[in-house]
Length: 125
Image (tube, rainbow, N blue to C red):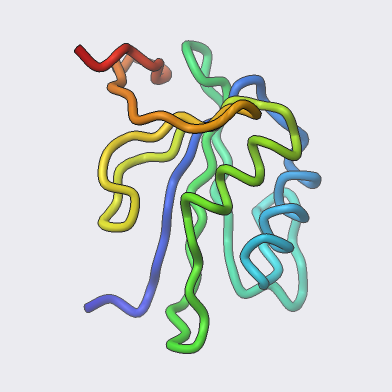
């Protein structure tokens, strides 16, 4: 078992990286840094990518496993979506199951379609 945990989500529209990292830090209970936004005491790292098709931005959040801390990925992404009034797409994981789309109005499980430079939501049939 790896001592690194991670989750990935995508946003539409793109959001300010600094605001997103501060809010994620609050929601996760640890500081989150990135290449462009280093933080001396950060316990988590965000790899942030931009896309030209579908969801405009992606965040891969990684941190060293700490037995006393449990991060609820669905709650963190749901709160981020609600507070920033954006759509956020959570990638499948052992915690989330399938793809989940969060909007300020709630969440639903969805399918996705991949593009050469991005990802978009498609309805579950």
